[in-house]
Amino acid sequence: MVILKVDIDIKMNKRLLREFIETRRVILSYLGYNVRSIVAQETEHGYHFWIDIEDHVDQKRKAELQFLLGDDQRRARYNFLRAELQAFDTFNALFSEKIKERVSLWKVIKIWLKVKLKLLLNSVTGKSRKW
Image (cartoon, rainbow, N blue to C red; front, side):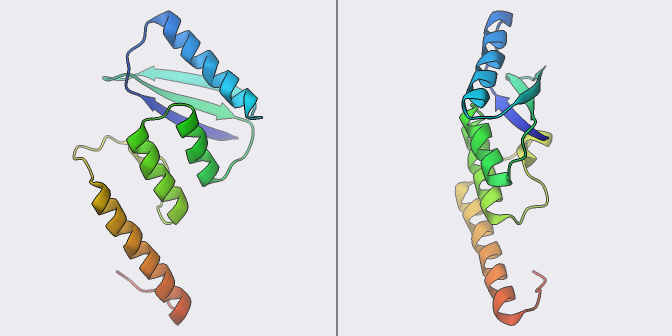
């Protein structure tokens, strides 16, 4: 079981919301996944969706599926980076708590480089370094 999280910053009427949910089922079915349930919660700017699929997927595929399901593009970019690094304690962090300040792409790249350097140093020295 895997929960996919999708953030849509658009308000929808009931008909469009039903169609949006049904098209997420169609997309996942087309890709070979079995949907157990979809929960929608209205937010200030749109909706958060929790999509429960039966199949297990790794973090990279989870990020890809959320993007294909229409997840916020900025959040998807960070999730792709987190999945690639496999260094963050939590995946989908932007979904669980609101970020008040916008994090620049440069700041994310600096974090990515720092983690890559740490991993390289650990592999060369065989030691874990505290940063």
